Length: 134
Image (tube, rainbow, N blue to C red; front, side, top):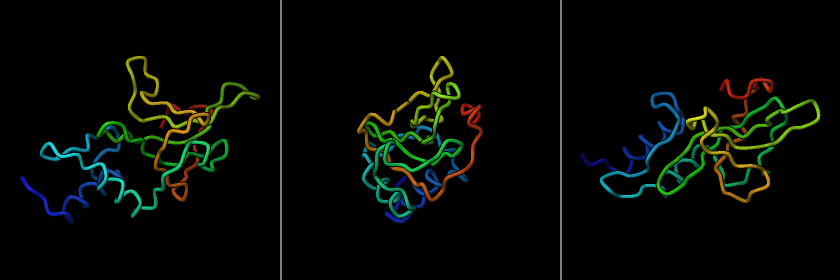
């Protein structure tokens, strides 16, 4: 099946918005063609900008939606503060996809310069005591 460029954009937008298609891990290939660049364009149209975890402004108790792209795969997740104790927090991107231990399959700390695409305008409140309950 072949899609027009506008139909492909609509499909990619559905992945980004997560209303019809669950936001998780998506292979960005169509008929063996990598559509990562098209996905990035649609991300930008939807208010997502390239940044790093450190560059996303969220306070403890908030989370911002983000995507991490890796080898033709898009991982949806959140940028948030993980609380270990009253004095110890860490800011990270955690994918909604989990590994075999039940932890975030993709974790990117604010110490890394890894590019993610985030939209802080869509921040939500979260339970900092239970960040795995996304």
